[in-house]
Amino acid sequence: MSELSQDQLLNLVNSKQIAPGSDRVRALTQRIVSDLFHTIDEMDVTPDEFWAAVDWLGRLGSSGQLGLITAGLGFDRLLDIRSDEADARAGRAGGTPRAIEGPLFVAGAPLSQAEVRLDEGEPQGEVFVMEGRVLDLDGRPLPHALIDVWHANVQGGYSHFFPGMKPYELRRRIEADDQGRYRFRSYVPPGYSIPPNSPTSELFDALGRHGHRPAHIHFLVVAPGMRTLTTQVNLPGDTYLDDDFAFATRDGLIVELERGVAPAGYESLGVNAPFVRTRFDFVLQPAVSEGESLPLTRMERVRA
Image (tube, rainbow, N blue to C red; front, side, top):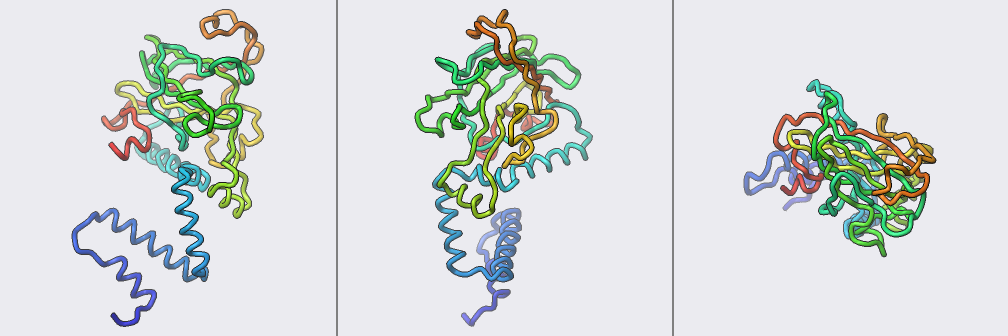
């Protein structure tokens, strides 16, 4: 083969094929490879810089932190923004805002009826109860809706990812009652930070950015015939509420906290002293296709 110019090499990379393949994958790959070729050329990327980046990508993949990078570089929120814009074009409005799933969901949490304790043993912080209903756009309850809930421990860690935590600690599924009501007890969760001395922290250090998230609680809410909702609520007063490294704080998802709530009526949750409470109703849109109502997380959806 004769000597190649950069443009000739790029054309060969983007045009070689021995089978039909996928038009969509080919188009996306051509765009990404072309942009990287041009970046290397225009920014005079050295071989050492290129192979350092390849090494970093390998370590990132083996660390299980790809989901942190996609959130921290704005891709998760970008996909939500695009979904919101598509809804607006289609005239689909109302309901609880979606919010990023994050990389730390685990399927198969223990199921309880109407109410549950997420915390186990002695409280690790302020006793906290969240309660409300699951409704449709007209305010009608959605009986027996299923709610996955998960949040971080006091060290900012999540079970199945943080050493020393029990399986499904601070993770549960709740089946709402026939009036769509749910409630759970836990403790007021903190925010969390990206792991230090990790591929993610290396990039954020190089970018001069922090890696902190404000206090939040994740949810996956499912009901027959309704659009599956992935969202999270934020707790007020957190330092990083308006400076979330994942850009996930949204209007309508910052709850109000009532402190000093009397324990009467909450004895079944083991509450025997004044506690912190918040009320929040999840409002679901009707599904316009069967796929929209599937109880799947983002990775379960693409692997289905």
